[in-house]
Image (cartoon, rainbow, N blue to C red):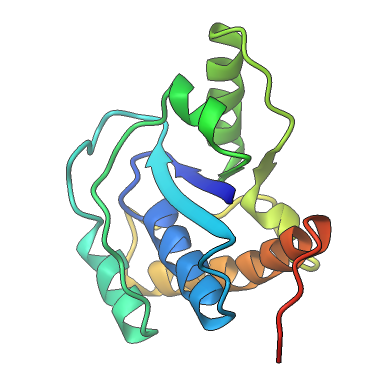
Length: 163
């Protein structure tokens, strides 16, 4: 199993939406036996909480189920997950600090938009303080980026989908 972890700040907006999109794409391609996916935040602000209602509604509009409770990244995640995908540079910096603090190594930490074709920016914007349109923008970015991520993972791990 290939384990993928999506990380944002509070684990209520971007990363649970990324987790939902990834799981939906994996299901659509019949690859549930190849991937495990989760999400978390670098902060402890929203541990145990449901995702932001605007993330849930955005996902629902696109037929994406979200079943998640907020949690904070830990050193166990660093050991357990093969790929750690940060939504922005601050998240990436916090993940790498955690890796260093626990004297761990992990060479598969990426920014989400590393997998997007010709991104206009390197970070997925945090929609928390904005309106519905910000969540839709994040959805579109994640949709494209996750498609690129999945293409790369299938190529790296030689996973071929039967038509």
